[in-house]
Image (cartoon, rainbow, N blue to C red; front, side, top):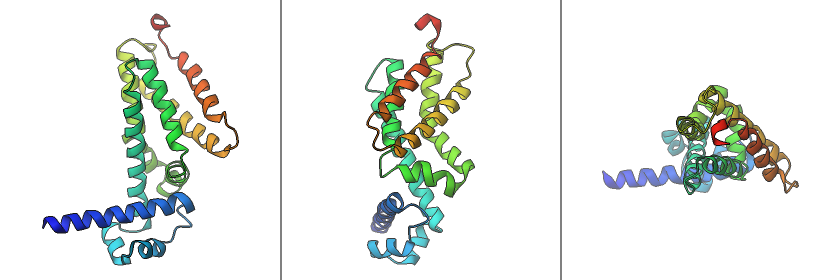
Length: 199
């Protein structure tokens, strides 16, 4: 039984790894399942056994990328003990990770288009947005943020701004300052959220 599970896990990982590369390079529409099964030396039956269809395979990869980015943001942010620095580091790491070639098409371009906004937002809320909301809630509890501001509203506004900024950065690959300009803008926007006691 244990051997079967190990073999199953290995098959799933092989499919995910290969499909992620194809989706990242070619996008959802131009990725052919036939190429994936040929490259992995598996059958279509094996693919359909683990993933219902092409969209199901993409959803699994989208979840994987969301989780990776969310964990990376949290891991880097926790290197600082200062809440404001944690928030800024988290924003910067998210933007950097989102525009990486292996993530961009999957996360921000095909994600909403293929899965629909409802699923996209649900996945986003379970990962990157969850970490952002927790950070903002902790900061509000500690008096770092204006008490009358809604944590949910701040979370959605910041998340939406960063998703849009990541697309803008990706659309301007020759602009070497686009990431730093975005961080500077977000830093200034966040200043407006600060409690007067912490300024």
